[in-house]
Structures are given as C-alpha cells and as structure tokens.
Amino acid sequence: MADRRLHVFYSVARLLSFTKAADTLHMTQPAVTFQVRQLEEYFNTRLFDRTHNKISLTEAGERVYVYAEKIFHLYDEMENSVRELTGEISGVLILGASTTVAEYMLPALLGDFKAKYPDVNIRLKVSNTDGIVSMVENNIIDLGVVEAPVLNKNLAVEQCRTDRLVAIAPPGHELAKCDTVPVKALLDYPFICREEGSGTREVINDYLRQADVDPSQMNVIMELGSLEALKGAVEAGIGVSIVSRATLAKEIKLGSVEVLELDTPLERPFSFVHQKHKFRQCAMDELLEFARNYCIDHQDPG
Image (cartoon, rainbow, N blue to C red; front, side):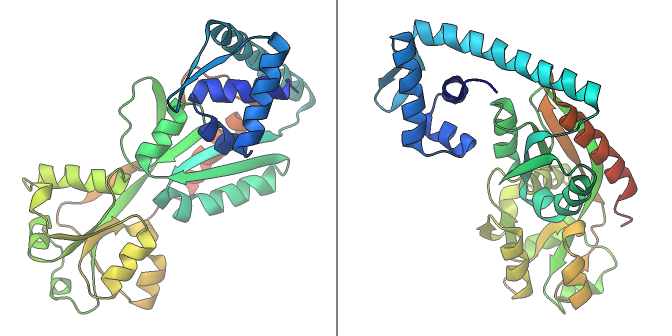
C-alpha cells in the first residue's frame, strides 16, 4: 500500500546499493534509479550522494529513511491487526536457506505449508550459511534456515532439528570394511569439501579440531559449491567426503556410495534465524509454528 517510490528508496537506503535493491525488489536497476529520482524530484533535493561507485545518504535522505521506517512499521501493524480480526493468513514471506536445507528439507515443508495457507506467497533465496545470515542482518529476508552456528547475538536463533553427518566413499572402498571410521583415517585419502562460507564445511572443521586434527592436514583435492556435484565426485572415485546423512536417500537406495559412520558421532543443528525486534506478519508467526511442528514430526530417525 505504501508509496512505491518510498518503498524503493527505503530498499536502496537500507542496502546502500542500487544493484542489491534491484535484486531484492525483482526490478531492473534503471527502474530502481527512476523511482528514486522521482522521489528526489518530489522533495526537490538529493537523497543520495553518489561518488566512485559508492552511495551514501544525504541529510535529507537520512530524515526520509527514518520516517520511511516508521511508515512501513505502521503499515505492517495495520495489516496484521486487520488480518487478526478477519482470521486471514496471507501476504509475501521471503525466506533464505543454506543449500543443504533448501534442497533436502524445505521443499516438503513449504509444500505442506502452502497447502494449508494457499494465500501466502513464499519466495526462497538460496546461499551458503554466511550469505543467509548476512541477508537476515540486512533485512533482505524475513527468515533464514541455516546449518551452522550463528554468532551474531543480535539475531534470534532457534534450533529446529538435529542433523547427523557421515563419511562417504566410492563403492567398494577399503574403509567400508570398518564398522565405524575414525576421522583421522580420512587423512590418508583424497578429500572433497564444500566451499568457504559453507555451514557444512565450518561444522566439519570444528569437528576436526576437536579430534586434534588441523583442517589443513586434510588432503583436499576439490572444493565444490554444490552438494550434488560433491556426491557425484565421490561416486566417480575421486575421493571421500563428509555430508549430511539426510541428503543420501537416493545414493543409499542405489548403492552408489559407501556410507561410513564416524566413530565419534558428528551432529549439528538446523536453525531458524531472524531479527529479534522486527515486527512480524501473522503469516510469519504461522510459518514459524508450522515449521516447529513439522521438524518435530519429521526428525531423522537415523
């Protein structure tokens, strides 16, 4: 309902980037620039200083930003109040999830949620854990679901389920003869890992350190940003790796990798993360409650 020009300005001001604002708003950059210029013409003053590919708010821009934040907060309160009165659960929710969560946990959860609340439109952004936390910090997304600990104490973090990680190796690999595998045994084989910033990689590195193994000791021959590519590389006999057991249903059924239990179990939380003080829509509260119950009902039995 709010003035489109003000909404676009607010996104640019919050992100201090026309490019990032265009991506968040699903607009072209020229369209974003046009809307901001329209607002500047309305106020007859510049709202941004533009120098050397960087932008900053002018004094007038700072004032408009403060009032815009209040206006959007009041709009949210108004819409929430009316929807509580009418019992309507609708709106747009922007979620973010790290790769493992987005590919193997969320599709079924969001499908069930959408069946119950068809008037809620959900947009999903996928990134690694660092990227998702950054998007929550910058209010680009309403809710993130991540696979590694979140260190920012200003964000609300709530564990939703526990995930178990296992080692995987090519079919017939000699490690498959063992009932359980010490993590130090993996030092003797080429290792395939996820990219920097991946929650899985961070959790594995912490696990290695607790086992008195320096992550740099691993014979890393590949770093891959795709879990499917990583599993494919293991299937092809290129090396071994450590992944979430929840992502291996297809491979276990086909017998295309050896699944090796670690002698010291490796578990991590999947967690919801969102702003502590951000006003939440009814739809967000419903999604959080739905997701909590879903995770309880669908815990991996291992």
